[in-house]
Image (tube, rainbow, N blue to C red; front, side):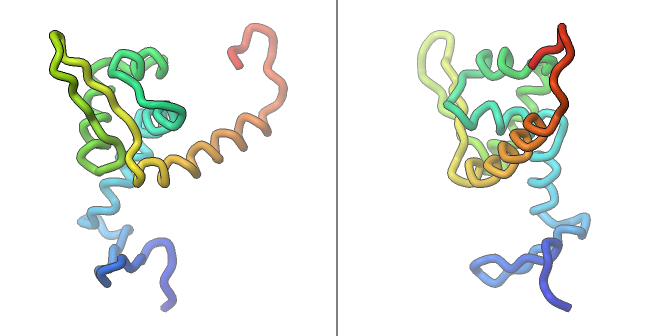
Length: 126
């Protein structure tokens, strides 16, 4: 059987079987493609943002869901978190090199979708 998307070899020779439920790569895919993970990654493509800037840029996300999503993406190594020792602390988030690499095709996907949609109707946000 030839290797495909579901069976990938890493630099160290370890194989990820992404269709297996115990595969760590599957968790990262789940976090990236979660309801809010995609939006966080795309929001951070243009520049680093503070928590409230991120929340304001992603309409409909609650602070609780944003915090959970950020925690998972930081743990996965897709985004970094920087805390400034001020009162109150200023927390800034940005894409890691891994996050930039993963978010690039997501941006391409969104660009393709928005370019192919029919013209917006009056009163529709575009």
